[in-house]
Image (cartoon, rainbow, N blue to C red; front, side, top):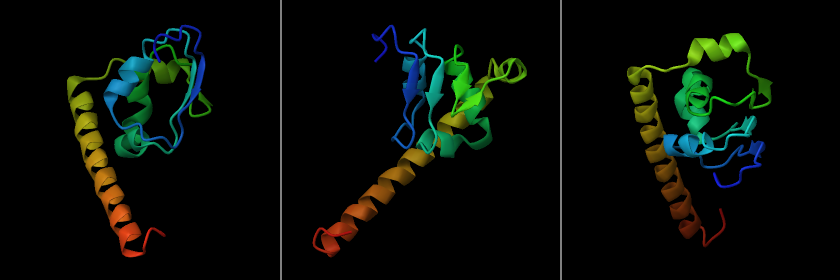
Length: 117
């Protein structure tokens, strides 16, 4: 993905994006200015720290989830402390584990109902 030098807008809404590595990779796409991560595990797990976390890794963004990033917002959220990053990583690990458990539960239900969920 990061080899696409012309990538400017990316919609990953409702995709299983749940790790900071994904943000770091997107941060290498230097022309990326608009990103949608609504409904991702990353968004739900990090809660209020979501926008600062994304901006920490993808500082060139101008639009996140359909909302413009203001100069004041940008200045207030970068750089993030090690404690904030660590906290976000723990929240993401928990969200990833929960997503795996939900997936296993759905698979079990499908088997119980003969493939019809």
